[in-house]
Length: 164
Image (cartoon, rainbow, N blue to C red):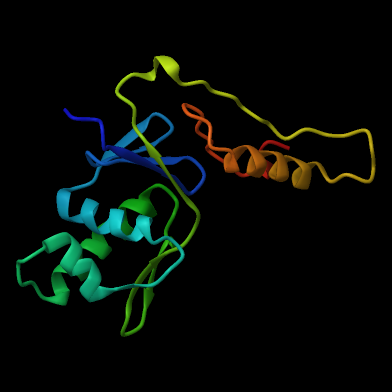
């Protein structure tokens, strides 16, 4: 398998999707069928923005003529998958336009050789100063590290409030 241009997507506080169609939540893995995977990747790539139906169909089905019903079935299937794992409102229908994936998505490149990668975990902490909000301080720290472009360093922001 050529991993040179492969990516994984991290979203909804703990979900990871690889381009081979495996959605992971903790120790659970769910296989996403090819067309649904294509639709989901298009939505993840444009997270927070409306993606027109025609754009999704063109991206996923390429030069094959399909009706909106094919896309509707894929969206229904994806919603069922997300509902089973507790995320039933992440794909929004925008009437007469298209769909939107709500939530932040982080895309990372999968390296063939992980020997040069480093990991760092920054957990929320408390401060002895009453003037500093630990959640804001933690968010700023993670955001500043995320903005640095360091080879082999990848950040996966998580909700800090679930650790406090």
